[in-house]
Length: 69
Image (tube, rainbow, N blue to C red):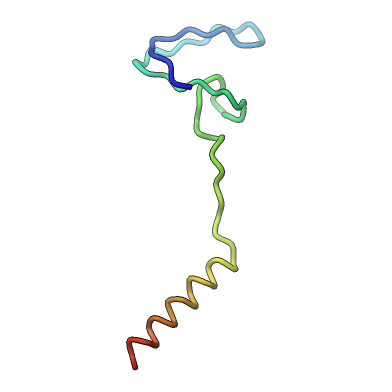
């Protein structure tokens, strides 16, 4: 959630946190390492697997073979 700054927030444990930025992204998923500020930890990140890398490699080999013909 984007909030116009500067912002002061009171966390669940009673700590007052502040940001002097003109626009602040507030974490609503609680996955952020910089909670209560958002660090985009909510985004699903996928790493290439061996199968994906092999498929890409096979596709490149096919294109290369077609160019040689």
